[in-house]
Length: 45
Image (cartoon, rainbow, N blue to C red; front, side, top):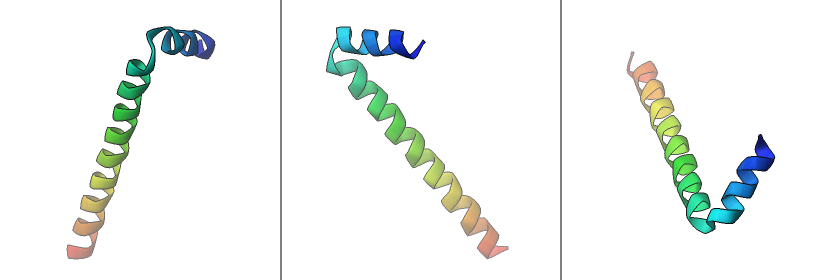
């Protein structure tokens, strides 16, 4: 499964890797925002 993904990324070039990196960064940013909001509500309450 992982080997096939690596082959696809290698064949399509850097565009797939760039999109994947954008998704990872977006996910991390969303998690940080959610944690920040949860922490803020916890402190205010």
